[in-house]
Image (tube, rainbow, N blue to C red; front, side):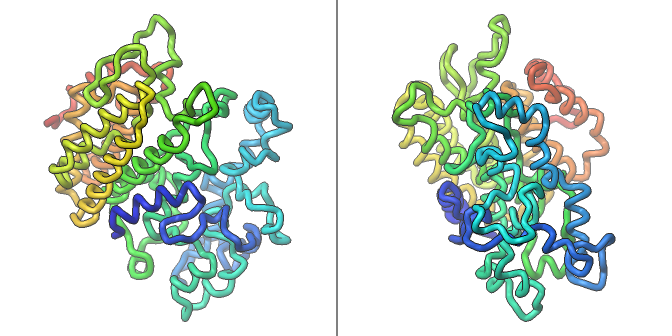
Length: 429
């Protein structure tokens, strides 16, 4: 498992389009992208059914094209909704605008597009695995190591920090691309993401067997969720640092605040006093969904970090709302994130940790700490994952379904109903 310092370096490098190991993210690397068609042959990754005679199923293309929503990412840009968004942004259309293609397609420069490359393939093979120009031959050679293939441009998606950097570059944002307030104001949906949950929901085009673990290693759901929370926090801090208070603008990047703090009827009182956010009424709340689970993680993996993380979060909220320099708060939180990730990496993450994390999150819920919609959304995904790890998901499916119902429509979310549900948990702490 990677150390926390490496995870935090990942967040910093991500903003320059570079991952933890120094390799560029696929969109910004120098290798030519040959196109999905190059990988889709029946003797490569286009087999109709999974094969058992090889180390990989070889039906990856079929899984991606039929089941993976990434394959439809470009087509979304052709919809009437996308046309309206493009009009609102003053763009000729969405399917040719770089600001849209950067996350809805494998938008590499024209000079790096091979003869069979098609931008309409959406988020295809090379958008995640890197331009195949140099590894197209070497990656099928059993005598060529993974290190050599990575040197040839194969992006290390099997290594957690690099995979997290890649996913968060679109699903959270970086210096290079972000679903800004302007884009959301034009009609783009609010981004919602949690690494483990979204990874599970995606149809896997790989098999985690003994060979896979030997070649790439594997982490359990609790570890992926926990380290994903740390990585989300690190990237959130980086975005706050680089985009929250621009020099030449009346307003900061408002997409980093909680949408629902402003977007509601005046008669609907949304503000409540929160321990983690001491800001007074009338202030716009920072979207801290990427920071929310740090406290329960600290309680389970290293309780000595709890006080520093708690005071750091309070300080961050205070400084942002007072338009003060948040550098000190960001730096303090970074140091504690470093220590927290190291603690998570050192400690096995199994059912014992899952039980403790679930107890902590249930306690937070019953205390009303998920009053914001973005907080409730993260809590539901965490609880679902933890119950699944513990083998209790089916026994509590009715209760979990009720949780999902309360967050099904962000415009209809009522915090009181959500909090009340925690009081009815059949095994509440």
